[in-house]
Each structure stands twice: as structure tokens, then as C-alpha cells.
Length: 544
Image (tube, rainbow, N blue to C red; front, side):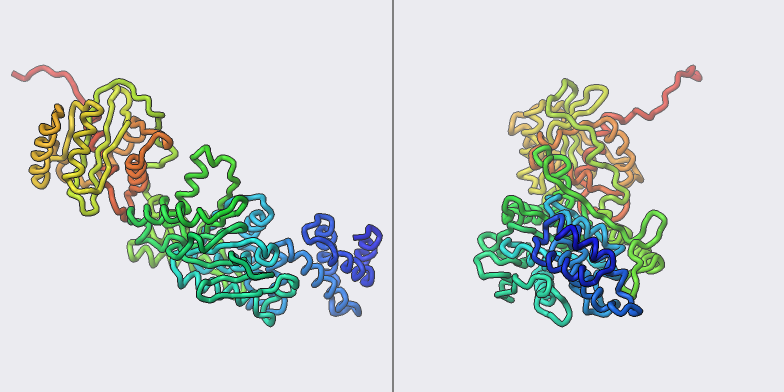
């Protein structure tokens, strides 16, 4: 843009402003100088759109065209321009822009290549899907040659998203998408495959919507942006270990494998569990040094802030007041289901409420095991979904190292030999089971397995403290476990050990957990070491 024209325009010369816009329209929307000039014109013209001025219509046109130019590279401007013809109360972005501005900025950074992965978590009905829909239509218009993939937990969800994309891109009476991107028309759509091609037809569409259970391999490709929106279906799936493992395997092996180099990933969803796809991916990026170069950010906005005030007070009835959310919370309280409130509305995974063990704070070692007394504490199971859990413990006198675990939901004819082999490999001097009538035959059979395998060790039983529930026992031993137990580092663990530690960290003293076998076995092990550590002893003279 001419350095002489812009000052005249900003001096109030409408003709100069119109000339400046002609130069701007011919520039690259990503040219920093052109963007800066358009932004200056848009801001100045907005102040002169005054019905009292004779040239108000000309300045409105200057403002509109400046905003349109900015919309081709600036996400906020795009959302505003997209709905320029709609009544304010029907718009998506303008009523929500204060609450959703951190999300808009993060998505802008994804598009500009300043972020590789983004995690978005907010309560229901505040605009998550709406802003992601607008983002996908924006990147499709800016870079139609790139392929973008949207996935969710079910086909009806992806179908609704697909229809939302088409509504924005093909309804010129409601949205101005075609005005923003006149050289990138929608050339083909396929409702069955849920694909949209922009600019030209090609093998991998500009936009593809596909459920996580749909056909991904060979049918989808992502070179622009991948969006995983609520890949976990809800609470029931989140608390089911087997389903979580299966889902995370699909995400890692099927979904993320569609990603090409340079493709950004946006993860959207309710934080149901620390083991859900969002939590699993965040842990990988934060703890695995091989991912240290991945630029990532989390935008987490709860329903209520620390002062119990709503973060989503918005005009035209599209938001929620503090009282609205407090009433919703009261409903969950009456149903004794605060875990769901915290997950759905406060974005705190169900395990966080009352969690006793935090993976980041547990002590770790790299596998170099010191000398000490070796023993095993066994929480046995007969299969059918319950886990046999048995940490191998090395007591050094100060700390307890756990170099291996037996952890399996297989039947006893599989787990008993596993226990015996672990005892032989590590030289366990003692193996303890909880004493009760149900397990008496189990322990006898296990002794026979030991003899058959030639393993020499002492097998003991110990009754559980009377009147003390399993939860209370785990809670009571949690300080000993946190302070004195040392676990293998992430890189040194096998799959069974990793599953064992996930169950330990998932245990909560509030709400429901699917399994507590791993933390219960650790509580038993702590009891074997620190059984008498709180017993008071005193010397006194015999009374007779």
C-alpha cells in the first residue's frame, strides 16, 4: 500500500481510503504490511460509520472491505465478517467473543504455525463445536489444497458437524463464506462419505468427517489440521479400563497415523478421565523426552471460577449465569454424583476428586535395584474383569523399591504361574495373601503350583483389619506409599507395569472407580513393611 495514500485515508479522506483498499485487495492476505494497513483502516473507518455523517455509507464500505481482507488471515475478523448480515442476537461469535477469545487466539496460533497441538476443554453448550466449525471452514478457504480431518466418538456427531460445515460454506444468505473466499468454491460434496472438496476434486478431500470407529486407514488423510472432538463418549467409557485402552489404541494406531508431517492437531472434549485420549496425549507430550519439541497448549475454561462466578456470562441468552451453574451443581449434589459435575463442567477428570496418588509426585528409579528383603503382596482374582495385582517389593530398610509387578485380569490358571515365576525370578522370601474364606482354596492351590514349579518361598495370609473397608485401608496407607515406595520410571516399565500404575493413579476416595486392585495390593505391601511403625512401646515393671 502506498505510504502516501494511507495517511490521507486516516486523515478522513474517504476517497483516499477507497484507493488504499484497492491496493490492499490486490495484496497477499498474509503480507504483514498489508495486514497492518488494513487493520488501521478497519479501526479508523469503524469510528466514522455515523448516521450523522454524509459520507457514512462510504466509510461503512471501507470498514466492511477492510474487515473482509483481514478475514482471509485473521480468525476473529473472519468470524465477525462471516455473520455480517445476521441480527446480533442470532450471531455466534460477537455475543461469545469475550468468553471465547482465548480459544480464538489459540486456534489462530494453530493456523499460523505457532502451535503443533492444542487442547480445548469447556462445559457443554458454550460454543466449543461452533467455534471449531467456523475454524474448519476458515482453514478450508485459506488452504483448500490441504486435507483436514474431523473425528468424534460416533457417526451421528460427525454427520451433524458435516452439515454444519455445509451450512456455513453454502448458505450465502446467512454466511459470507463465499465472499471471503471467492476463488475457492465448493466443487463437490459427498453426504455418505462426509467429504467436501474446495477448489478442485481430489482423492483426499479438503474436509473429511469420520467417527473414530469409521474407516480411517486408506480413506482419510490429514495435511492441514486434525480435530478430535469428544473422542471419549462419556463417563461409562471413561471408567472402563478395557474400553479406555481400546480407545487409546485406536487414537494412536488408526487416527493419528493419518497425520502427515506439519499437520496440526486440535483436541476438543470434556475431561472425563486422566486416561482419556486428551489426558493420555498430554502426559505423553509432558513426560516423554522424545516429544519435547512439540509445541502445545491447553485452554481449559471451567464453568465456575475460584470465586464461584460463571466464566460464560454472555448477552442474548446464549450464556450461563453464576446462578445457572450453581443450580446445575446442586442437581449433581442431590444425585451424589459430583464426579460428573467436576468432569463435565469444571473439566476435572473423575479421578482428580479425592485422588490419593499423583503420577508426577510419585518417586521413581531407573531400574537399578538395591539390595534388600524381597517380598510380594498379592491381591488375587479369579478373572472375569477383576485383576490379580502383586507388586514385587525390595525393602532396603529406608525405602521400598518396586522393580516389577504381576497385573492381569486373566483367570487363575494363567495368573498363578505368573506369580510363581515372579517369585522365582526376584527371589521373593515371602508372598502374602489376605486371609478370608473365599481365598483359602486359592492359596492352597497356589502352594501346589509353587511346588510343581520348584519355587521355594514362604506363603502367608493376613486377615484384613476388622471393621475397616478397603477404601479406608488404601487411604490410610497412602502416605507410606507416597513417601517410601519407589516405582520404575516410565521408560523402564513394561505394559503390565504401566497399566498397574494407571490404576493406582486413578484411585479416588470420592466417587466411583472401576478397579482398585493395584492400590489395594500396594496398601497390603505397605502394611507388611510398616505394620508396627505406629505402635507405641514402653518399659514398665511386671506387677507380680
